[in-house]
Amino acid sequence: MSAKKAILVSGNLPAAVLDFLREDFHVVAHAEDRPIPRRRLLRLLADKAGLLSMITDRVDEELFEQAPRLSVVANMAVGYNNIDVTGATRRGILVCNTPGVLTETTADLAFSLVLATARRIVEGDRMVRSGRFKFWAPFHFLGREVTGKTLGIVGMGRIGQAVARRARGFDMPVLYHSRSRCRRSLERKLGATFLPLPSLLREADFVTLHVPLSEETTHLIAREELALMKPTAFLINTSRGPVVDEQALLDALREGVIAGAGLDVYEREPAVTAGLEKIDRVVLLPHVGSATLETRTRMAWMAAENLRMGLRGERPPHLVNPQLMKKRKKDA
Ligand code: GLV
Image (cartoon, rainbow, N blue to C red; front, side, top):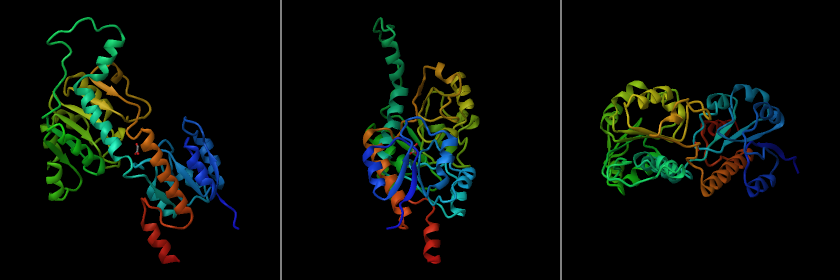
């Protein structure tokens, strides 16, 4: 029998997933909740054929150089902006992600930020806990209505569509903007109207972002875009931090250009632009879009299966650079 290939699992995953991988591979696991330190990651990869990576791992040219045997990187996330896919493809390294299994969970979180910002849920909790709930009054601690308000969805992929489905339950007209327009039948099903981004920003009461991070989407929402939004509107970001110019957002919130924001992701994560934490109309979460036990378990299994299949020479179910499989077939 041939020797087992060696792999590195860079995050703290359930024992059952590691046991499954141990059936085929020699597994080294970073069994801690803090991200694996960069130097340790590079050192451990020296003899590894596979990496089950986290979004906190930068998989770049430097890493590829330190990992001459690496042939599969399975990211435990749907987003893979932490990976230099072009560089990986050039080196023949398969890159995989975990789409689908986190769609509803992430949409739930985006929608909970819509509700939390508009109805001042977190601020109210802080008020009660700190003993400042002293009276009830008819025009005290008012939020904004959600039902019937207009929702603007930027990025109409799986998660954007799942958010649109939730909006129907709140009788919200849905506007959307996407790189490519959806089929008319899907638009009808979702009750969603396509608009250019500036028009969407002008009309929506809530703008929620669901685009992948790329050069094109970096600072998609910056000063100029925020200035188009209504002073009563809220911005929700559960996609990737750099999609929003965070300093511009802070300024817009301070100056009353928009009413509030719900953020799960940050431009320089885990750092948060100083000043945001002082604004009550902002809800700040620690990147937990897909963080439920059920979903993270599904993601871990999916990443493990992607890695296993890739290292066995089979096509992984969720491959980001499928052109490599075609090339492998042609070369075989
Ligand atoms: C999480 O942020 C993901 O991309 O899955």
